Length: 449
Image (cartoon, rainbow, N blue to C red):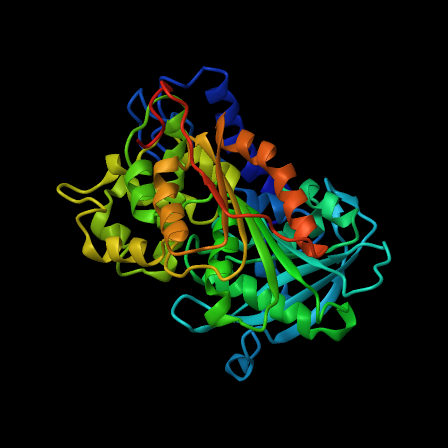
Protein backbone atom coordinates (compact mmCIF):
# COMPACT_ATOMS: atom_id res chain seq x y z
CA UNK A 1 0.00 0.00 0.00
CA UNK A 2 1.46 3.34 -1.05
CA UNK A 3 1.47 6.27 1.33
CA UNK A 4 -0.30 9.50 0.40
CA UNK A 5 2.90 11.32 -0.55
CA UNK A 6 3.94 8.53 -2.92
CA UNK A 7 0.48 8.46 -4.51
CA UNK A 8 0.57 12.16 -5.20
CA UNK A 9 3.98 11.72 -6.73
CA UNK A 10 2.53 8.95 -8.94
CA UNK A 11 -0.34 11.17 -10.02
CA UNK A 12 1.72 14.29 -10.65
CA UNK A 13 3.86 12.90 -13.46
CA UNK A 14 1.10 11.83 -15.86
CA UNK A 15 -1.01 14.88 -14.99
CA UNK A 16 1.87 17.12 -15.92
CA UNK A 17 2.31 15.26 -19.19
CA UNK A 18 -1.39 15.54 -19.88
CA UNK A 19 -1.39 19.29 -19.25
CA UNK A 20 1.55 19.75 -21.62
CA UNK A 21 -0.17 17.68 -24.28
CA UNK A 22 -3.45 19.56 -24.01
CA UNK A 23 -1.69 22.93 -24.09
CA UNK A 24 -0.17 21.99 -27.43
CA UNK A 25 3.43 21.79 -26.23
CA UNK A 26 3.80 18.09 -26.95
CA UNK A 27 1.05 17.26 -29.43
CA UNK A 28 3.38 16.82 -32.37
CA UNK A 29 6.31 15.54 -30.38
CA UNK A 30 4.83 12.16 -29.50
CA UNK A 31 5.61 10.49 -26.19
CA UNK A 32 8.95 10.46 -24.40
CA UNK A 33 11.10 7.42 -24.94
CA UNK A 34 10.60 6.22 -21.36
CA UNK A 35 6.80 6.10 -21.68
CA UNK A 36 5.15 2.74 -22.38
CA UNK A 37 3.31 4.01 -25.46
CA UNK A 38 5.09 4.55 -28.79
CA UNK A 39 5.04 7.73 -30.85
CA UNK A 40 1.76 7.81 -32.77
CA UNK A 41 1.13 8.97 -36.32
CA UNK A 42 -0.03 12.62 -36.51
CA UNK A 43 -3.59 11.61 -37.48
CA UNK A 44 -4.04 9.59 -34.27
CA UNK A 45 -4.72 10.30 -30.62
CA UNK A 46 -1.60 12.01 -29.21
CA UNK A 47 -2.46 11.80 -25.50
CA UNK A 48 0.25 10.21 -23.34
CA UNK A 49 -0.55 7.54 -20.79
CA UNK A 50 -3.18 9.03 -18.51
CA UNK A 51 -3.57 8.58 -14.75
CA UNK A 52 -6.10 5.81 -14.08
CA UNK A 53 -9.09 6.43 -11.83
CA UNK A 54 -8.83 3.45 -9.41
CA UNK A 55 -5.56 4.60 -7.75
CA UNK A 56 -7.10 8.05 -7.34
CA UNK A 57 -10.22 6.54 -5.77
CA UNK A 58 -7.92 4.61 -3.44
CA UNK A 59 -7.18 7.91 -1.70
CA UNK A 60 -10.85 8.28 -0.66
CA UNK A 61 -11.86 7.27 2.90
CA UNK A 62 -14.02 4.36 1.67
CA UNK A 63 -11.87 1.40 0.54
CA UNK A 64 -12.15 0.29 -3.08
CA UNK A 65 -13.77 -3.14 -3.56
CA UNK A 66 -10.46 -4.92 -4.14
CA UNK A 67 -9.35 -3.82 -0.66
CA UNK A 68 -12.69 -4.29 1.10
CA UNK A 69 -13.18 -7.82 2.53
CA UNK A 70 -16.96 -7.35 2.44
CA UNK A 71 -16.82 -8.13 -1.29
CA UNK A 72 -14.92 -11.40 -0.81
CA UNK A 73 -16.38 -14.67 -2.06
CA UNK A 74 -17.69 -17.02 0.63
CA UNK A 75 -15.75 -20.25 0.99
CA UNK A 76 -18.91 -22.24 0.18
CA UNK A 77 -20.07 -20.23 -2.84
CA UNK A 78 -21.40 -23.27 -4.70
CA UNK A 79 -23.87 -23.92 -1.89
CA UNK A 80 -25.66 -20.64 -2.64
CA UNK A 81 -28.44 -20.43 -5.22
CA UNK A 82 -28.44 -17.74 -7.96
CA UNK A 83 -29.81 -14.58 -6.40
CA UNK A 84 -29.25 -15.76 -2.83
CA UNK A 85 -27.93 -13.06 -0.50
CA UNK A 86 -24.49 -13.72 1.00
CA UNK A 87 -24.22 -10.66 3.23
CA UNK A 88 -25.70 -7.18 3.64
CA UNK A 89 -24.81 -3.87 5.22
CA UNK A 90 -26.17 -0.34 5.48
CA UNK A 91 -24.16 2.30 3.60
CA UNK A 92 -24.47 5.98 2.73
CA UNK A 93 -25.47 7.21 -0.72
CA UNK A 94 -23.67 10.36 -1.80
CA UNK A 95 -24.25 12.61 -4.80
CA UNK A 96 -21.22 14.69 -5.82
CA UNK A 97 -19.74 13.74 -2.46
CA UNK A 98 -22.72 15.07 -0.47
CA UNK A 99 -24.72 12.59 1.67
CA UNK A 100 -28.19 12.02 0.22
CA UNK A 101 -31.10 11.53 2.68
CA UNK A 102 -32.20 8.04 1.64
CA UNK A 103 -31.95 4.56 3.13
CA UNK A 104 -29.30 2.52 1.28
CA UNK A 105 -28.68 -1.19 1.74
CA UNK A 106 -25.85 -3.02 0.03
CA UNK A 107 -26.30 -6.70 -0.82
CA UNK A 108 -23.68 -9.20 -1.91
CA UNK A 109 -25.25 -12.12 -3.77
CA UNK A 110 -24.45 -15.14 -5.88
CA UNK A 111 -24.95 -15.09 -9.65
CA UNK A 112 -23.58 -16.96 -12.68
CA UNK A 113 -21.10 -15.90 -15.33
CA UNK A 114 -21.63 -16.45 -19.05
CA UNK A 115 -20.32 -20.02 -18.69
CA UNK A 116 -22.67 -20.70 -15.73
CA UNK A 117 -19.85 -20.70 -13.19
CA UNK A 118 -20.87 -19.29 -9.78
CA UNK A 119 -19.76 -15.72 -9.09
CA UNK A 120 -20.57 -13.00 -6.57
CA UNK A 121 -21.41 -9.39 -7.19
CA UNK A 122 -23.15 -6.56 -5.35
CA UNK A 123 -26.10 -4.24 -5.63
CA UNK A 124 -27.33 -1.15 -3.81
CA UNK A 125 -31.01 -0.69 -2.92
CA UNK A 126 -32.04 2.92 -2.34
CA UNK A 127 -35.38 3.60 -0.62
CA UNK A 128 -36.68 7.17 -0.24
CA UNK A 129 -38.38 8.35 2.93
CA UNK A 130 -41.61 8.97 1.00
CA UNK A 131 -44.33 6.62 2.32
CA UNK A 132 -45.88 4.16 -0.15
CA UNK A 133 -49.32 2.70 0.54
CA UNK A 134 -51.88 0.56 -1.24
CA UNK A 135 -49.44 -1.79 -2.99
CA UNK A 136 -45.86 -2.99 -2.71
CA UNK A 137 -43.40 -0.17 -3.43
CA UNK A 138 -42.34 -0.39 -7.11
CA UNK A 139 -38.69 -0.81 -8.06
CA UNK A 140 -36.64 0.76 -10.84
CA UNK A 141 -33.54 -1.29 -11.57
CA UNK A 142 -31.11 1.33 -12.83
CA UNK A 143 -28.26 -0.12 -14.86
CA UNK A 144 -25.54 2.51 -15.12
CA UNK A 145 -23.28 2.51 -18.16
CA UNK A 146 -20.35 1.10 -16.17
CA UNK A 147 -18.22 0.59 -19.31
CA UNK A 148 -15.11 0.05 -17.21
CA UNK A 149 -12.45 -2.54 -16.49
CA UNK A 150 -11.96 -2.15 -12.74
CA UNK A 151 -14.31 -2.89 -9.83
CA UNK A 152 -13.58 0.53 -8.30
CA UNK A 153 -15.69 1.95 -11.15
CA UNK A 154 -18.78 -0.09 -10.19
CA UNK A 155 -21.81 1.79 -8.85
CA UNK A 156 -22.01 -0.09 -5.54
CA UNK A 157 -18.76 1.74 -4.75
CA UNK A 158 -19.11 5.02 -6.66
CA UNK A 159 -22.55 5.73 -5.18
CA UNK A 160 -21.04 5.54 -1.70
CA UNK A 161 -18.27 7.98 -2.59
CA UNK A 162 -20.46 10.34 -4.62
CA UNK A 163 -18.68 9.87 -7.96
CA UNK A 164 -21.25 7.79 -9.85
CA UNK A 165 -21.61 9.64 -13.14
CA UNK A 166 -25.35 8.95 -13.61
CA UNK A 167 -26.44 9.43 -9.99
CA UNK A 168 -28.51 12.56 -10.66
CA UNK A 169 -30.73 10.65 -13.07
CA UNK A 170 -32.32 8.52 -10.35
CA UNK A 171 -33.82 11.43 -8.43
CA UNK A 172 -37.07 11.70 -10.44
CA UNK A 173 -37.93 8.09 -9.69
CA UNK A 174 -37.00 8.58 -6.03
CA UNK A 175 -39.21 11.68 -5.78
CA UNK A 176 -42.16 9.52 -6.80
CA UNK A 177 -41.44 7.09 -3.96
CA UNK A 178 -40.01 4.27 -6.04
CA UNK A 179 -37.13 2.16 -4.73
CA UNK A 180 -33.98 2.04 -6.87
CA UNK A 181 -31.85 -1.05 -7.47
CA UNK A 182 -28.34 -0.30 -8.79
CA UNK A 183 -26.44 -3.52 -9.53
CA UNK A 184 -22.80 -4.13 -10.37
CA UNK A 185 -23.96 -6.05 -13.43
CA UNK A 186 -20.47 -6.43 -14.91
CA UNK A 187 -19.32 -8.26 -11.80
CA UNK A 188 -16.10 -7.91 -9.85
CA UNK A 189 -14.20 -8.93 -12.98
CA UNK A 190 -15.85 -6.24 -15.16
CA UNK A 191 -16.72 -7.96 -18.38
CA UNK A 192 -18.69 -6.10 -21.02
CA UNK A 193 -21.59 -6.83 -23.39
CA UNK A 194 -22.07 -10.49 -22.52
CA UNK A 195 -25.17 -12.31 -21.32
CA UNK A 196 -23.87 -12.69 -17.79
CA UNK A 197 -24.84 -9.00 -17.47
CA UNK A 198 -28.47 -10.05 -17.76
CA UNK A 199 -28.00 -12.83 -15.21
CA UNK A 200 -26.46 -10.42 -12.70
CA UNK A 201 -29.30 -7.91 -13.15
CA UNK A 202 -31.92 -10.61 -12.66
CA UNK A 203 -30.12 -12.14 -9.69
CA UNK A 204 -29.83 -8.70 -8.06
CA UNK A 205 -33.62 -8.47 -8.29
CA UNK A 206 -33.99 -11.93 -6.80
CA UNK A 207 -31.72 -10.80 -3.97
CA UNK A 208 -33.73 -7.71 -3.10
CA UNK A 209 -36.98 -9.69 -3.33
CA UNK A 210 -35.67 -12.25 -0.86
CA UNK A 211 -34.60 -9.69 1.75
CA UNK A 212 -37.81 -9.31 3.76
CA UNK A 213 -36.50 -6.22 5.56
CA UNK A 214 -36.59 -4.27 2.30
CA UNK A 215 -40.32 -4.89 1.80
CA UNK A 216 -39.93 -5.43 -1.94
CA UNK A 217 -40.83 -9.12 -2.19
CA UNK A 218 -43.93 -8.57 -4.33
CA UNK A 219 -42.90 -5.35 -6.07
CA UNK A 220 -43.34 -4.70 -9.75
CA UNK A 221 -40.05 -3.90 -11.48
CA UNK A 222 -38.96 -1.78 -14.44
CA UNK A 223 -35.47 -1.78 -15.95
CA UNK A 224 -33.68 1.31 -17.23
CA UNK A 225 -30.31 1.74 -18.90
CA UNK A 226 -28.59 3.80 -21.57
CA UNK A 227 -25.64 2.69 -23.70
CA UNK A 228 -23.72 0.12 -21.64
CA UNK A 229 -26.54 0.24 -19.10
CA UNK A 230 -28.97 -0.64 -21.85
CA UNK A 231 -26.79 -3.67 -22.60
CA UNK A 232 -27.35 -5.11 -19.13
CA UNK A 233 -31.04 -4.16 -19.16
CA UNK A 234 -31.82 -5.74 -22.52
CA UNK A 235 -29.94 -8.92 -21.71
CA UNK A 236 -31.95 -9.19 -18.50
CA UNK A 237 -35.19 -8.67 -20.45
CA UNK A 238 -34.16 -11.35 -22.95
CA UNK A 239 -33.23 -13.88 -20.25
CA UNK A 240 -36.07 -13.31 -17.78
CA UNK A 241 -38.42 -15.96 -19.14
CA UNK A 242 -35.88 -18.78 -19.06
CA UNK A 243 -33.42 -17.69 -16.36
CA UNK A 244 -35.55 -15.88 -13.75
CA UNK A 245 -39.30 -16.38 -14.30
CA UNK A 246 -39.80 -15.52 -10.62
CA UNK A 247 -38.85 -11.88 -11.31
CA UNK A 248 -41.95 -9.76 -12.00
CA UNK A 249 -40.73 -7.52 -14.82
CA UNK A 250 -43.24 -4.93 -16.05
CA UNK A 251 -41.08 -3.33 -18.74
CA UNK A 252 -37.65 -2.19 -19.90
CA UNK A 253 -36.61 1.25 -21.17
CA UNK A 254 -33.27 1.55 -22.97
CA UNK A 255 -31.47 3.77 -25.44
CA UNK A 256 -28.19 4.00 -27.29
CA UNK A 257 -27.25 0.39 -26.71
CA UNK A 258 -25.37 -1.85 -29.18
CA UNK A 259 -27.33 -4.64 -30.82
CA UNK A 260 -25.23 -6.65 -33.29
CA UNK A 261 -21.71 -6.90 -31.80
CA UNK A 262 -20.17 -8.13 -35.04
CA UNK A 263 -21.33 -4.96 -36.79
CA UNK A 264 -20.25 -2.82 -33.84
CA UNK A 265 -16.78 -4.36 -33.87
CA UNK A 266 -16.46 -3.80 -37.61
CA UNK A 267 -17.40 -0.13 -37.18
CA UNK A 268 -15.28 0.61 -34.10
CA UNK A 269 -12.07 -1.11 -35.21
CA UNK A 270 -11.58 1.10 -38.25
CA UNK A 271 -10.45 4.69 -38.51
CA UNK A 272 -13.54 6.92 -38.65
CA UNK A 273 -13.78 10.58 -39.68
CA UNK A 274 -14.63 13.51 -37.43
CA UNK A 275 -16.65 12.88 -34.29
CA UNK A 276 -17.15 9.24 -35.20
CA UNK A 277 -13.48 8.56 -34.46
CA UNK A 278 -14.34 8.64 -30.76
CA UNK A 279 -15.95 5.23 -31.31
CA UNK A 280 -12.52 3.58 -31.54
CA UNK A 281 -12.34 3.38 -27.75
CA UNK A 282 -15.32 1.01 -27.58
CA UNK A 283 -13.30 -1.75 -29.24
CA UNK A 284 -10.40 -1.43 -26.78
CA UNK A 285 -12.96 -1.62 -23.98
CA UNK A 286 -14.75 -4.52 -25.63
CA UNK A 287 -11.54 -6.46 -26.22
CA UNK A 288 -10.42 -5.92 -22.61
CA UNK A 289 -13.73 -7.12 -21.19
CA UNK A 290 -14.30 -10.03 -23.56
CA UNK A 291 -10.77 -11.32 -23.05
CA UNK A 292 -11.69 -12.03 -19.42
CA UNK A 293 -14.62 -14.25 -20.37
CA UNK A 294 -13.16 -15.67 -23.59
CA UNK A 295 -9.36 -15.56 -23.19
CA UNK A 296 -8.66 -18.08 -25.94
CA UNK A 297 -10.66 -16.21 -28.59
CA UNK A 298 -9.55 -12.72 -27.51
CA UNK A 299 -5.84 -13.45 -27.13
CA UNK A 300 -3.93 -10.22 -27.62
CA UNK A 301 -0.60 -12.02 -27.96
CA UNK A 302 -1.88 -13.73 -31.12
CA UNK A 303 -3.67 -10.73 -32.63
CA UNK A 304 -2.02 -7.45 -31.58
CA UNK A 305 1.45 -6.03 -31.99
CA UNK A 306 3.61 -5.26 -28.95
CA UNK A 307 2.36 -1.66 -29.06
CA UNK A 308 -1.25 -2.84 -29.19
CA UNK A 309 -0.71 -5.22 -26.28
CA UNK A 310 0.81 -2.33 -24.30
CA UNK A 311 -2.26 -0.18 -24.89
CA UNK A 312 -4.57 -3.06 -23.98
CA UNK A 313 -2.71 -3.70 -20.72
CA UNK A 314 -3.09 -0.04 -19.86
CA UNK A 315 -6.84 -0.18 -20.54
CA UNK A 316 -7.30 -3.23 -18.27
CA UNK A 317 -7.74 -1.23 -15.03
CA UNK A 318 -9.54 1.99 -15.87
CA UNK A 319 -12.94 3.63 -15.71
CA UNK A 320 -14.80 4.77 -18.78
CA UNK A 321 -13.49 8.34 -18.83
CA UNK A 322 -9.83 7.53 -19.33
CA UNK A 323 -10.57 4.43 -21.41
CA UNK A 324 -12.38 6.77 -23.80
CA UNK A 325 -9.53 9.27 -23.84
CA UNK A 326 -6.97 6.51 -24.33
CA UNK A 327 -8.78 4.69 -27.12
CA UNK A 328 -10.56 7.37 -29.13
CA UNK A 329 -9.00 8.16 -32.51
CA UNK A 330 -6.78 5.13 -32.00
CA UNK A 331 -8.25 2.30 -34.10
CA UNK A 332 -7.29 -1.13 -32.83
CA UNK A 333 -6.93 -2.28 -36.46
CA UNK A 334 -3.72 -0.23 -36.67
CA UNK A 335 -2.22 -2.60 -34.10
CA UNK A 336 -3.04 -5.93 -35.71
CA UNK A 337 -0.15 -8.29 -36.33
CA UNK A 338 0.72 -8.83 -39.97
CA UNK A 339 -2.15 -10.57 -41.73
CA UNK A 340 -4.37 -10.71 -38.62
CA UNK A 341 -7.85 -9.20 -38.15
CA UNK A 342 -10.72 -9.80 -35.75
CA UNK A 343 -12.95 -10.88 -38.61
CA UNK A 344 -10.44 -13.52 -39.70
CA UNK A 345 -10.67 -15.33 -36.34
CA UNK A 346 -13.74 -17.61 -36.33
CA UNK A 347 -13.75 -17.92 -32.54
CA UNK A 348 -13.95 -14.13 -32.15
CA UNK A 349 -16.82 -13.86 -34.62
CA UNK A 350 -18.64 -16.70 -32.87
CA UNK A 351 -18.38 -14.96 -29.49
CA UNK A 352 -19.59 -11.65 -30.93
CA UNK A 353 -22.50 -13.37 -32.67
CA UNK A 354 -23.58 -15.36 -29.62
CA UNK A 355 -23.34 -12.38 -27.27
CA UNK A 356 -25.31 -10.04 -29.56
CA UNK A 357 -28.84 -9.03 -28.64
CA UNK A 358 -31.66 -10.92 -30.32
CA UNK A 359 -30.75 -14.38 -29.01
CA UNK A 360 -34.08 -14.38 -27.13
CA UNK A 361 -37.20 -12.26 -27.52
CA UNK A 362 -38.23 -10.40 -24.34
CA UNK A 363 -41.57 -11.48 -22.91
CA UNK A 364 -42.30 -8.04 -21.39
CA UNK A 365 -42.82 -4.56 -22.89
CA UNK A 366 -39.82 -2.70 -24.35
CA UNK A 367 -39.31 1.05 -24.84
CA UNK A 368 -36.20 1.69 -26.96
CA UNK A 369 -34.77 4.78 -28.60
CA UNK A 370 -31.63 5.47 -30.61
CA UNK A 371 -29.93 8.53 -32.08
CA UNK A 372 -29.98 8.82 -35.85
CA UNK A 373 -26.41 10.18 -35.88
CA UNK A 374 -24.96 8.33 -32.89
CA UNK A 375 -21.20 8.43 -33.39
CA UNK A 376 -20.41 5.63 -30.89
CA UNK A 377 -23.12 3.12 -31.78
CA UNK A 378 -24.51 3.78 -35.26
CA UNK A 379 -28.11 2.83 -36.14
CA UNK A 380 -26.79 0.18 -38.55
CA UNK A 381 -25.63 -1.79 -35.50
CA UNK A 382 -29.02 -1.56 -33.79
CA UNK A 383 -31.69 -1.82 -36.49
CA UNK A 384 -31.07 -5.49 -37.40
CA UNK A 385 -31.91 -6.48 -33.82
CA UNK A 386 -34.90 -4.13 -33.75
CA UNK A 387 -36.20 -5.77 -36.93
CA UNK A 388 -35.66 -9.21 -35.37
CA UNK A 389 -37.63 -8.20 -32.28
CA UNK A 390 -40.42 -6.70 -34.36
CA UNK A 391 -40.74 -9.59 -36.79
CA UNK A 392 -40.86 -12.10 -33.95
CA UNK A 393 -43.65 -10.26 -32.18
CA UNK A 394 -41.86 -8.48 -29.35
CA UNK A 395 -43.96 -5.98 -27.38
CA UNK A 396 -41.78 -3.18 -28.73
CA UNK A 397 -41.88 0.63 -28.94
CA UNK A 398 -38.86 1.83 -30.92
CA UNK A 399 -37.99 5.19 -32.43
CA UNK A 400 -34.95 6.93 -33.84
CA UNK A 401 -34.23 10.48 -32.70
CA UNK A 402 -33.08 12.99 -35.35
CA UNK A 403 -30.24 14.22 -33.17
CA UNK A 404 -26.44 13.90 -33.28
CA UNK A 405 -24.06 12.69 -30.59
CA UNK A 406 -24.38 9.87 -28.08
CA UNK A 407 -24.71 11.90 -24.86
CA UNK A 408 -27.19 14.35 -26.39
CA UNK A 409 -29.47 11.43 -27.22
CA UNK A 410 -29.11 10.13 -23.67
CA UNK A 411 -30.27 13.42 -22.20
CA UNK A 412 -33.16 13.99 -24.59
CA UNK A 413 -34.39 10.40 -24.46
CA UNK A 414 -34.28 10.13 -20.68
CA UNK A 415 -37.47 12.13 -19.77
CA UNK A 416 -39.76 9.98 -21.97
CA UNK A 417 -38.15 6.88 -20.46
CA UNK A 418 -38.86 8.17 -16.94
CA UNK A 419 -42.46 8.91 -17.91
CA UNK A 420 -43.00 5.49 -19.50
CA UNK A 421 -41.43 3.46 -16.69
CA UNK A 422 -43.31 5.49 -14.08
CA UNK A 423 -46.59 4.80 -15.86
CA UNK A 424 -46.16 1.04 -16.08
CA UNK A 425 -45.01 0.86 -12.46
CA UNK A 426 -48.27 2.55 -11.46
CA UNK A 427 -50.28 -0.03 -13.35
CA UNK A 428 -50.98 1.87 -16.56
CA UNK A 429 -50.77 0.02 -19.90
CA UNK A 430 -47.48 0.27 -21.81
CA UNK A 431 -49.16 1.61 -24.95
CA UNK A 432 -49.34 0.19 -28.47
CA UNK A 433 -46.45 -1.36 -30.35
CA UNK A 434 -44.66 0.83 -32.89
CA UNK A 435 -41.44 0.87 -34.89
CA UNK A 436 -40.52 4.38 -36.00
CA UNK A 437 -37.02 3.80 -37.37
CA UNK A 438 -37.34 6.69 -39.80
CA UNK A 439 -34.61 8.57 -41.64
CA UNK A 440 -34.74 12.15 -42.91
CA UNK A 441 -34.82 12.25 -46.75
CA UNK A 442 -31.68 13.82 -48.17
CA UNK A 443 -29.84 13.58 -44.86
CA UNK A 444 -26.06 13.07 -44.87
CA UNK A 445 -24.70 9.57 -44.59
CA UNK A 446 -25.35 8.09 -41.19
CA UNK A 447 -22.50 6.69 -39.09
CA UNK A 448 -21.85 3.10 -39.95
CA UNK A 449 -24.00 3.14 -43.10
